[in-house]
Structures are given as C-alpha cells and as structure tokens.
Amino acid sequence: MTENLEHGLVLMLMGMGVVFVVLAAIYLGIVILGVMDRLWPAPEKESSSSTPAAARRPATAPSDGVTAGPTEEEKAAIKAALAHHMGVGPDEFDVRFR
Picture 1: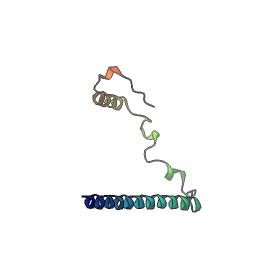
Picture 2: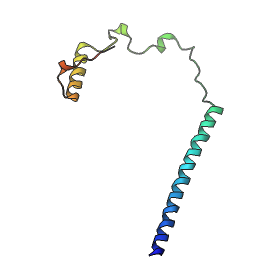
Picture 3: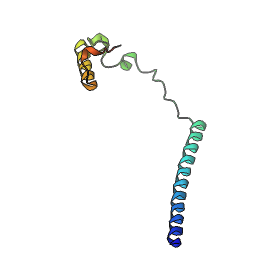
Picture 4: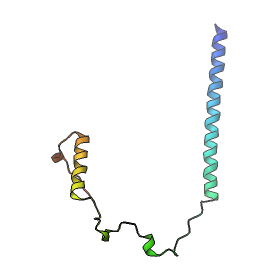
C-alpha cells in the first residue's frame, strides 16, 4: 500500500511541477514582450495630410438629412426592449439619450 501512495505522490508532484514550469514560461514570455514593447514601440501611422478634407469626412454627414441621435421611433423601440429585458413596464424607468 505504501508503494501505491508513494507512486501517487510522485505522479502528483511531477504533474504540479509541469504546470508550474508552463505557467512560469508564460509569465516570462509576457514579461519579455512587455520589455520589447517599451524598447521598440510600434511605429505611428503617417498623417495623411495629402488627403483632401472631403475624403476624410464620413460617408453620411448630418447635412445629408441624418440626425445626430436616434429618432423618436428608435428611442421607443430601445425603451421597449429594455423594459422587456428587465421585466418591468416602460413607464417605470427612464432612459437618457445624448
């Protein structure tokens, strides 16, 4: 019986040792990547000053009839979905939109 117990303890220690070594290797890799990131930061993108302002503007500008926020219908749908999700009536809470 002591032979089985000894074999089990050796197996447990070897398994825990393997896990410890793998975790230490992962930690060491993260530390090395952190040091490399500080030593060699990623190059910044060039500013595209040669691109005209019209090309940098989003495809849908507010001057195209698009409002800055959700419409009243969209606000009602959002409030109804939240009320359904929370299991309360839509009059029991208020939603603030920016």
